[in-house]
Structures are given as structure tokens and as C-alpha cells.
Length: 288
Image (cartoon, rainbow, N blue to C red; front, side):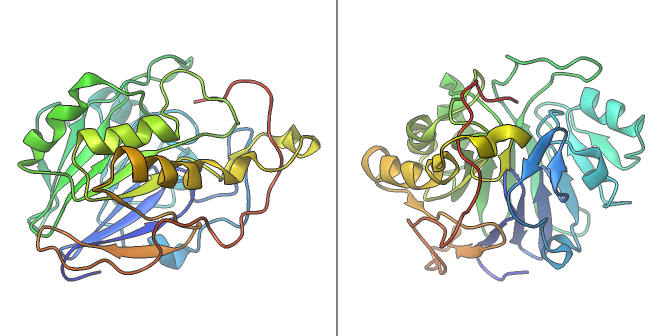
């Protein structure tokens, strides 16, 4: 855990570990080597990196965000999500799934860290047999305010998120890509994600939802697309959200970010990962 500010570790795709004020939060855990038919580039996350989570935040039920095999590795840990999603997960063995109503803050037991759902627009690709409810999350803690966007397209109410938090976003975890070179609706590209950071007055951002998953057949295609979205976001934010410091992490890498007290951040900033090998691009639209 970290004293002052927030420590963010990116485990690939939309999975991050947030340590703040003695609490560990885990977002959209993908802890195995695949999500449905999609395959992970590189090894699965080190269990030491996500052990000891106090709560899990699940934005929606697409396979790359609510991977049941991963959630079952977290027995007894509260899994916060929309009520319809929680009912579905409990019916499939995730007994600690907890439905959080809109506009309700949930406090991590024994702490001053509060969590609530945030709006998101991600309903373009409904799946059979699963609810299609999608949200992001707001985290309000004494040391920092955090926005985990989940999966979302841009929406006008992004400007209202700082008011819900009681101030500017200290750390934004924003999706900047996907598992293919072309995004379907309900997502943000690098430029849209940079504008989102400007809208919420984010002081720091970590790009997620990029460079991790690929379809099995994509190795036949030219290389390169998996490495682009993170650096593209850093470049776009330098122009569109100049007050936001971007930290482009490699899977497993972490950074300590300033919170409300303004302590300086440490760790990598504004750079691409040292090495992100993987398959080439896919020609059809990206999935959920």
C-alpha cells in the first residue's frame, strides 16, 4: 500500500491495482491468459501483484472485463458492479458480487475510501444471456480522487464527474484502444480519451484497454497495431489536456501518482513500454 497519493499498477487490458489509504482495489480483473476467444500477449499477471484486494470493481459483463475464471480466483472479495450484473454473477458462482445502485457511495469496510458507479456509454454490442449494463467508477479517498472509466464512448456528462467527486480527478484510468486496430462504437480512441481527461480536469492519467488482447488468427497480419494506442494517447494528451501528466505503463509496471496533497509522482511517464511484442493487426472492427 502507499501513503499519500495513489499507486497504480497496470496488469494489462482494463485490469489495474489501485493502492490508496491502506486499501487495495482491483478493476475488471483479467488474471488468466485468455478472455473468451481472445488471447493475452505475454504472461498472465503475477498473483503477488493482485493479492490482498479489498474490493473488485467490474464495469460491465463483456468477456474481457468480467472474466469468470478470474473472478473465481478472488473468493470472498466484494465485487462491486451494477445490480443486474451482480445478480448474473452470483448465479454463476461469484458469490461476493454486490450490486451498487446508481448515486450510492459504498465505503470499503474499515476505511475512508468510497466507491460509486459513474456513467458510461457502452451499449452498442449487447451479448446474449448477459445483462448489458455498463458503468465506470469513481473512487473518493482522503488522499486522491480516481476515475476508472471502464469501457465507454465520449459523453457530455463527463464534465459533471468532478462535481460528483467534489473536485478535479487526480488520476484517470481511461481506455484508449481495444483488441483490434479499429474500434467499434462504445469505445474511445486516443484522441477522444485525451479530451475526456481534459473534461474531468485530470491531473494524471494511465491509459488502459490496449496492447494486451488479440484474436487467435491475428499473427498472420502485419505487426505494429498493438503498440500504438498508449503512445498515441500520450501525444494527444500533450496537446489536448496539457495539465494532465500521462504515464504509459507496461503490463505489471506501477507508478505512484500525486493525490490531493500534490506530492510528486514517481515512475514512468509519457513513454511507451520497453517491449510489447505481439501479433499484427486485425482488419475487422474491434469487439467489446
